[in-house]
Length: 199
Image (cartoon, rainbow, N blue to C red):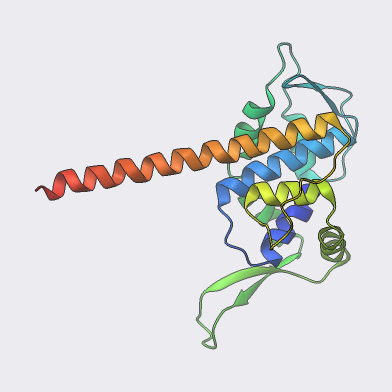
């Protein structure tokens, strides 16, 4: 399992209402952190410098590695998050459903009630839950960026890896930028509706 899959499982399991865009950006950050851990990339300032093409047994991580920009000037972390993050939560949902790691859970008593997905009890889902319970710093920071806080303390997790810290900061910035775009659209839509309504 990867940090991104663990993050997705936590988001499903805690039944928090998480914005798909926020979660997708955090998943892209999680993939990048795992690529750093695998030695597939390094971070130079705010740029992603690819290393050796790793052999990855996870299809989505393989896609992430294959999508790296391998010519200088290398891609900026923020640009990577937006590009890779596009619809990434849907891709993780499809992959986990395909592997039988997510199952539909009907809400309400009626057989035609609305369906939501929940993680199946597997070794992978238990591992994700254990990482969450242990407040593993990277997973906790990514979850916080995606809006999954679960009443956790406001203390910043202690991270001693500068590259990981840089990626986490970029994820937080991207999520804040997405929220600013949402707010701007809401204001513009409200102003447009008032214009049509008239005095």
